[in-house]
Image (tube, rainbow, N blue to C red; front, top):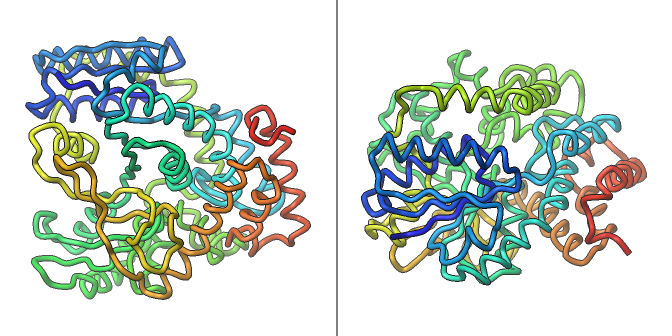
Length: 438
C-alpha cells in the first residue's frame, strides 16, 4: 500500500481532482490518502468527498484525516502541498495598497509587490512543512501547487533535502488552447517549453512534426481568437514565441499593458481568457467562494453520481511513474537552474521539461533562451532571487530592491514612492512576517 499525503487538503478543487486521478491508477487503487488541514470543518467535508470518490470507484483505498501534519506525512511516498497562508482579508492588501499608489495588479499571486508579499507570508509555513517532510518522509516525491510557485519551490529546494518540484496548469492548458485555435488534435502536438513559472515560452510548437507557429499567426487574424488573449497575443507578435500563462497574469509581469488607464482599458479589461482582467472581479470571486464554499461542497456531496474519470493534472502521472507502475512520464516542472537554462541565473527556479521514472525526477537541459526572452525573464527571476534572500536573511532592504526593479512597478512609480508603498505593505502584513522582527 502506497501513502500519499495532502497538506492543505481543504483546497476542495485540487484535492477532489487529484484524489480521483490518483485512485484511477491500478498501482494506487488501495493507497492510503492522508488528508491534513488546519481547518477542522473543511477537513471534515473533504474527507467525506474523498470517501464518496472511493465508494463510487469501489476502490480498496484507505482515507484518513488529521490536523496533525506529522501523522499525515509519516512514511508517505508522495506529498501534495496546496496551502494558503491567510485568507482574502489578508491578501487583498497585496493588491489594494499598490493600486492606491497607481500600480494596477490583476491577480497578484506570482511576482511583483503582491506576489512577493504573498511569498513572505507563506514561506514560513512552507519551510515548516519542508522540514517535517525531511523528518517524516525524506524519500517522498513532493509536488507543490501553492503560489507564488517559483519563489516557494526555490526556497524549499535550497533549504530542504526532499525531492521537490512545482506544478502549474498553464503549460498543458495553453498547449491545448493553441491546438484548438488551429484545429489540431493534441495527440499530434509536440512542444519544447521553458522559462520561469508563468513566463515560460514554447520554444517550438509542432503538429505532426511541422512548425505550427505560422498556423497560429494565421489564426490570430480571426478577431474572436485575437480577443480571447489580447495581452498574450501582443506579446507573441512582439517576442516571436508564445507564453504559457494567461493574459490576466502576464499583464502584471511586464511594463507594457497596465501602466496607463487607456492601456488597461484596451488590453486588460476583457481579453484575458478567463476573467475580465481587473482586481475587483477577482476579489469578488474569492469573497463569493468564502461565502459559498460550504454550499458548493454540500451540493457536490448530494449528487447521486459523480465523475471519477482521470483528468489531465500532472501529479498522479508523476507518482505513477516514480512509485507506481513505473511508466515514464514527461512534464514541465519548477526546479533549480543547475545547468538547465544557460542564460538565466544559476540556482534560480526555472520551469523546464522534467522526466519522471523509477529513478526519480530528472530535469532536462534546454540551453539558452532566445535573447529577448532571456531579457524579460531575467528581470523577474533576479527579483525573485532577491526576495528569497531578503526573507531568509530578514533584510527589508532586499525586499524593497526586489520590488524596486519589478517591471510594472518601476514603470509607474519613482523610487521614493516605491519605498513608501513597500513600507505600507510591511505594516499591513506585520503579524505574518516574523522573519523581519528585530
